[in-house]
Length: 243
Image 1 (cartoon, rainbow, N blue to C red):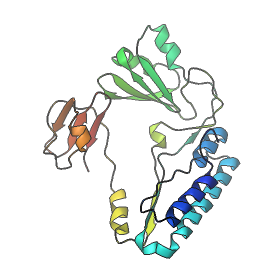
Image 2: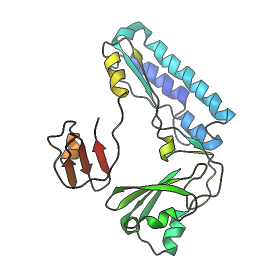
Image 3: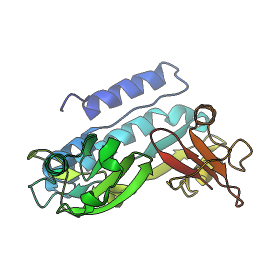
Image 4: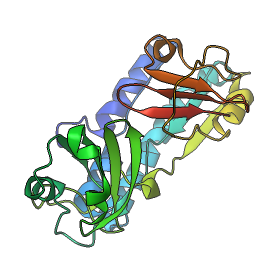
């Protein structure tokens, strides 16, 4: 569907990988997301698809039964969705053109990432009908999100479900299996996620919760605060790591 593998194909490939002796298998079941986009996340079509994918996950779990004590099984989502109730999109592109703002706009369902000069003073965005809020991500990038039921696009799109707004940041994580590390893994997943903030200059190398090496090697600005939290701003985004 829409270029993605069918869930039944993903299931068959996953089961084959397990039977072939793989020690790590990563699979994406995409149909729930696609069907929710097309019909809406609470539609009968989406609910049927959720149930069907649940059964496919059950087949994968069943394939592990013979070596259950050696496996950790994680089932996670990357976001939720919300229903589109107003099919007229929020067109930041036209609004920016009228104001002669230069830069880039990336529409992502119920959110849009605005970059370049048009993000220097983002106050114009909140005056566009349908925009519920904005948050600065870096020096020249801003996240805007839509009011419930709305979405961003330069033209009308036949979509009934979207994600991108803070309302769709909810995630689900299920950990199972007989591996000795399952309980610790579940406890780690249950910890609060890092928050996002814009930060100032400093150094995070001695942070209580250090950043991944790849980020530390290429920071533009970073600061270690008195609470032991590590703030970092790259050319793309500002983050705060504080567990």
